[in-house]
Length: 111
Length: 117
Image 1: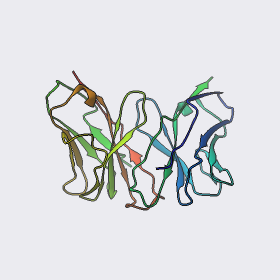
Image 2: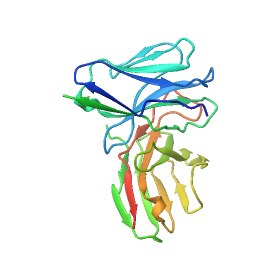
Image 3: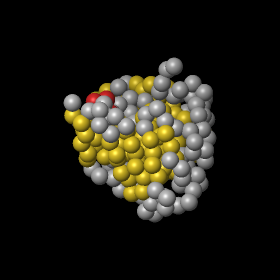
Image 4: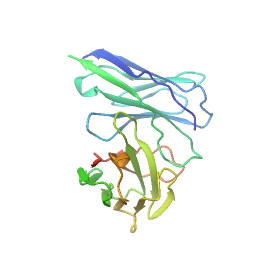
């Protein structure tokens, strides 16, 4: 399975944008890039996913590099509720649907 | 609507006891997953069901771990003769999609925290 690399932790102030990077240099052409986050004492929750084009939804935006070897999750205005561990995950269509989590990025948001 | 529920939320077992953890997926979701999350780590895949069929059990750490989903809805993860290294949060997730359809997200329950003393 292709691996992802994320910083262990990041900090932000409330109301500021946050850019969470993810490197996936061994990504294959058919791998989708998924992001999940896990708030304290909760199960993970889906944030966004994409294949090649940038994606937007109500939670966040996903910017995918042209060579697909990296991506960035963008939270446009961080709130205290966004403090969580963010996981960047590659999903291969020929694999089973299991999610392979790394250690993720722990985001701290300060008021 | 109701999300994925798990019970019990907390379980303390003495080493050697058997435990059973229950997962109620979102109604109508075909796929069901179990994950194990050790303290400070990301979740790790244990097993996958499509309806009542267990299609992937490659993540089960030993033959003491057993999962079932007999009617294609509720699932139970059973751990026999628990050991201290089994202490973790056990997460259940369900999805509308079937194997190979990556457009569907997984919805996770709150987990069961198992502590083996």
